[in-house]
Length: 285
Image (cartoon, helix red, strand yellow):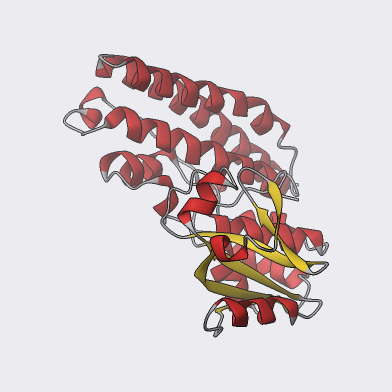
């Protein structure tokens, strides 16, 4: 259900997975994924924003809610029994995202739960319920365990309508980051001097970078051939793993981190310039 879903949060993953299960083209919601490396550096390395709080692009659910494609609101259920009744009362187009306790998240769902509030999709299954977790993807039946899982809060998601060509045009027009206007980013060693936990920040940045470029390949793949982006994604995986290796090893000089970051940045500059050229060619044809 969550394969090839590229959300930046658990709620975003659930919204995207639900929409795709209903046949909606979720690729359109990846419209603003061409975040330049300079923006990633400023947010995640210079300012130390963690992946779970990355906010340089709007959450998918917020955009879709404004477009009238979905509604997403906090449940008014008070207590576990009311929450159960609300889950059982969902109509065909309605879904409940339940906040899950940290203990259940960790021990049963085997999720890392970086944020203190983790949400999972919950649906009726016979006389009980099933919880759908996004990362790792897991379906867990819960009946007697419900009290261990429920953390006192839910969102009610409703899919209100399909998406159409007008929506596609609207999302294209509101892009904040446009590859056709891309200018390469370059960095100096001094840009990393004095940054506390630079290695951890670089690893976190590499993870978000990979996710954004996956989204970018999906979105622009509807307009041009983006196979070259997918071919370049293993480089992001390699850099992420290398950053993590450096962090675990310890005592790795900052110069090594900088060299690896420059390799990733050079690859990204080449990728973005290629995408820019392909989009320009389509526009000119």
